[in-house]
Length: 257
Image (cartoon, rainbow, N blue to C red):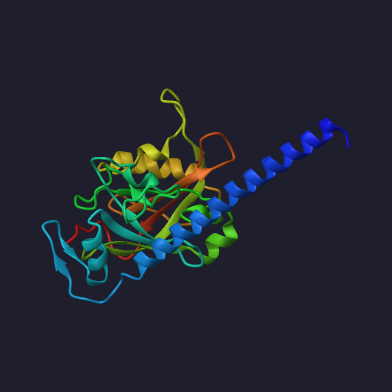
């Protein structure tokens, strides 16, 4: 074997070992992050409700609230890994984009609610973001909604705020692909419709997400319905996004008690 070929072989092995090491670290980190969130889930215990200056925290969420008062809710979609706390820091909305429940720096972060969404007004649309992790955690499974067959088996999911009166069942209204557009683009930008308090904004948002939806869910909405939008990255285009919009079906907008 020539010296050049030996050098190429050695370099290739170094690159392979390095890449394998990075990949292993990525999946080990993912397992740790998932384990940490599983530990948070175990904090759900039946105990007395806790009255706070914002509202009454439901008993099963009290221990989580005492551990980290940034928790705002819990999202769960059956038959997926999506079973996570939802955080919110309105003065620094993306604080949890790379932090776990313990506020430690991590690639996966923790699902978080947009800063202008407000459960205490409440606003018409709760926008919740989560990473699309290649190890299958966070909002990776959200993209299963691209298939109508998955939707037919999962037409609803649960989103609770931690406060009394905020435990809700949501029916999927639309699910589709989009992307982050330039500021001067006239394309519909679903991600600019967090919060919302006017009927005109509400109707514009519903028209927009319905036009982008991969299929017709058959679910209609009207102003006064409480919406939640789940958003994650997608890789069909640069700065791609995938969203699922759903409406609360067991109640209209409800202020925490």
